[in-house]
Every structure is written in C-alpha cells, then in structure tokens.
Image (cartoon, rainbow, N blue to C red; front, side, top):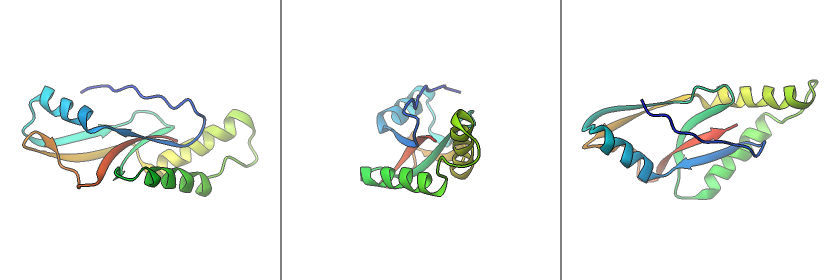
Length: 119
C-alpha cells in the first residue's frame, strides 16, 4: 500500500487530476504485470473518481454540478454547514475505485484519468 498526500485548502469542491507519471511510477515500482489497483480515500470529506482528463472543462463542470446539487446552505451554520455538504458530496462520488492492470499499466480509456476530489 502507498499513501499519497493531497490537500484541498480552498474550501470549495475541487477535482485534482492524478497525472499519468504518478500511476506509471506506481506500477513499475510494484512490478505489477497483471492485476488490479484498488484506490481508496480514507477520509469522510474526500473522494476519488475516474472521468475524462483531456478537457479541463469536464472537471470544472463536475465541480459546478456538485456545488449546485448540494449547496452550502441550510439550517446549520459555519463549519457544521460546510462539513455536512462535504460529507454528502463524498458519499455521492465515492471513496474507492478499482482499475485493472495489464502489462504493468493501468487500463483506462483513452481520455480517462483518475481524480482526487476534495469535496
């Protein structure tokens, strides 16, 4: 297992792409020829997803849609309100992904990438 640190100090929903070099280094270092890569985010206000990575507008669209679906409003105030919305967004996006590994490479579609979601 390998830990990767990523922080979202912006206070807003943000998708951060995991670049291909990081994924390739992981598979080479582990000498994995064939198998699965299980990605898990052990935090209640974070998530991980796979989506199109070629067009940066896609990540911004997802960020905007999550903020529209779950706005930071409601009866609670301050930190409790923000934390509540982050928990709901984390549940919707999910905390894990499974990616197949073949010939030492993650099997993703041509335009797919892995995104850490600071929700």
